[in-house]
Image (tube, rainbow, N blue to C red):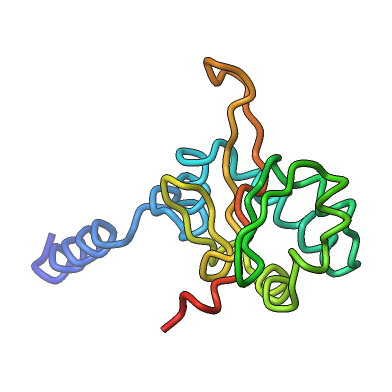
Length: 157
């Protein structure tokens, strides 16, 4: 082998080693999915809940939104918090709970822009939180629902 051939082989080998391995690199969405799985329980359920929430809010369907909420829920639509104890009460106060600002946040939220921490999955600046809830003492059974709805206007600088 001549020097030129050896140099070409060396360049080829080193360029292959410097390329990222296919299938190993995580996409931002894969990292988000993993974070949701660890903190909430199932990214698939969160995706579905977000989709259903956006559809229900877009159609102004209080019953469909109420079905996505964990009760009782303390909501803060503005001046002071109120506790909503049932889907029926949520439907009755829907327009007071899902204000124009909160509706906008829900409708504009993109899955890949969700924020995740130990409290759950945050929409917007904290207007809506999706959380995993235990259904039994040992948390062998759980569900993913909306756990917080709040107006964050007064919290922003």
